[in-house]
Length: 123
Image 1 (cartoon, one colour):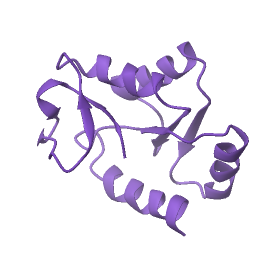
Image 2 (image 1 turned 90 degrees about the horizontal axis):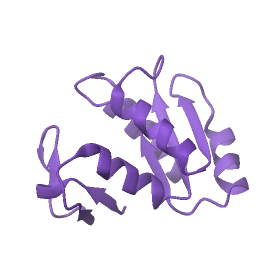
Image 3 (image 1 turned 90 degrees about the vertical axis):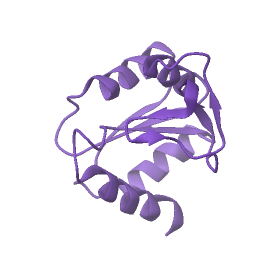
Image 4 (image 1 turned 180 degrees about the horizontal axis):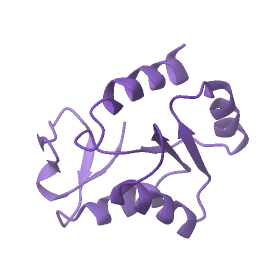
């Protein structure tokens, strides 16, 4: 895992622990962090349940398009793991930016996403 985080390692639920090797931005602005993570990736995977309806995820989609990054919109309720693996391979993605709604906007998303990513990368 690598990437950028806001100054002060700020996160919605507190401070991001040092065990995560993230580079702090010069600002605590989430949009700056988001753009750096998109720019420094080979592709962007957006995970959502029903529809993309929060500002941060919408910004990530817009930035992926702005920076011409391969973009995959993944409805986590569909079983599309093999399709995503193929997309990653076909686009030669080594650094994947994974984004989606905040836990405060969708209380189930963390557990669903965790299980999904285990299936995607470890099984």
